[in-house]
Image 1 (cartoon, one colour):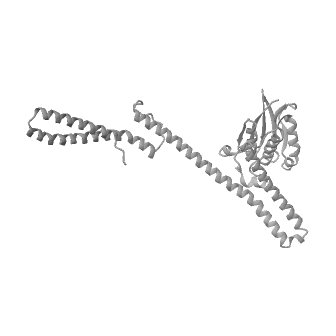
Image 2: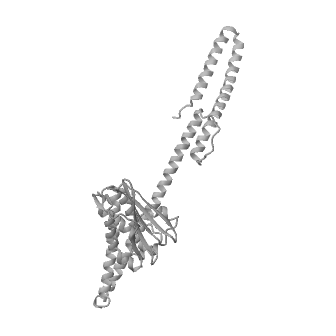
Image 3: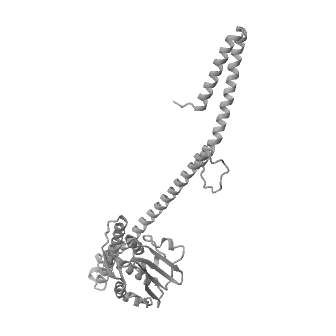
Length: 342
């Protein structure tokens, strides 16, 4: 059953009351013939009056409600200040609907962006795993077709198969680490340790990689050898290793990677800087995304999983600290992050 509009009920009651009052008046003061004439004309005029009043009330309400419908169905953010009276209840309702629509529009945009990232992520995972899988398949098929009996082929292809398997394991391990860091399942084991000595260990492990590209691994001037931090040592070792390896892979041949320390009262700021190829400004906002690569072809040639910087960011944030990047193409890149000093 359709509901009756409030203005129509009020109008109907008002007209009914008027008619009854007039009838009472006519019965007491007029002759029967005149009363009959009036009884015919009064309802007619009352009906016309009621219709006119109803029309103008509907017109008034439509004029007030129409902007709200326009806001909902044809929403466009408008920063212009309205000249309407802010005490007008219809103006207030319209503003509330407009704010609600802005919130929903932003929510929809965020969901679309998340869906886009989800599709990119799944596509990247698929691509990263397909490459070593297809390589392994090709090597094994070659060995099965007679290559296993050829001493010049069998060991070569078995070693290549092993490298492809190691790459798959590395990708899966990195994905598992990110998943645990995001969900909070990966618990950090905090301890006090010498950050200078940790960086020295990283330099020692990466010395061969750096020497192949004639890149020097050095400490900044006046670096304090006795600077201690309170953090998860294996995870911070992973952070420094990833950043140093990244600087070597994207550094200029004959260049330099410098690690510096800065005392910030209760914090220590670490800077890992290189004078390599740099990163374009358009790529900087996405540099910490999973599988995001500035130079896709070169990254895969270097053997990276595309997850290193994402893991670095998650580890630093798990320590309730921040990491930042500054870069200029052709000049180099600088990563800085903080740790609690102990």
